[in-house]
Length: 338
Image 1 (cartoon, rainbow, N blue to C red):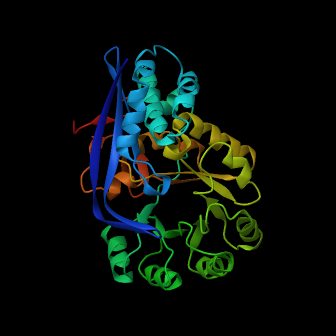
Image 2: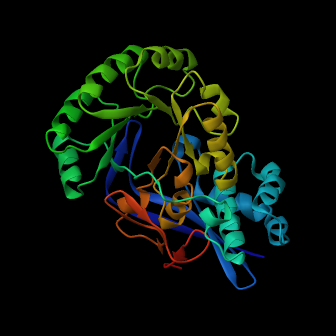
């Protein structure tokens, strides 16, 4: 098996701002694994919050190149368990590798991923579309630019309720709120009351990740469901979120790929938590992998490729929140920009 690493800078259509940063370009690593005439693709983007960069991911993967390339017919689960000890400090790199290996494995089996996993795709949830923090006028303009059934609105400003109040005047769409750790306990509880009246479905990670006492207080008193993101990174975090959140947002890059991501989703379901998978502004490589998890999810945020000025791949397509799969096997991805 051959390992190929490619670095890209994904240009965004608009400056993307959340409570802690703004970006115009998203660095991304694409991993390709080639074997027996087939190629599998995986992706992980850089992220300063998690201190992850593309050069570090590439260096970590190159250190174990011989181990990766000596792999033959192992299942994705066996492969992940073998590689995890070498990349346990770099889950982003592990994600890109696991995604590529799982894609390759499914293609060699002549199946799409959801077929490999025996998932039924008849009741897939719609994806939301994210509106980043900007002036109220710009946020309204972004929303009008792409009419959508569900919007995820980034907050964490001093004008949060005013922003949602104004946005509500322009659409009947469902709203989801992501404050990216930007609120406190009382602020969250009070904001939930106002936001529920404005047609908000749930709040995502309103407070700092390690504020477990605060999360429990909000869990008890919030009139809106609260979904964990930054508080739920790896498999061991799912159990911690029980009785502190109403659901978990599994990010593949944070947990180390599709293989542990599927386990986290099943664990969450067993605990009665709502399940969600989110993206990290990936191209269609990463987004297409997420799409095959849809049958196991209550909510999904997989609009990353829609935020790009130019995609580097083709795979699943998204229209009005509805995801359509590629005719190709595996994740269905073709890398267009080599």
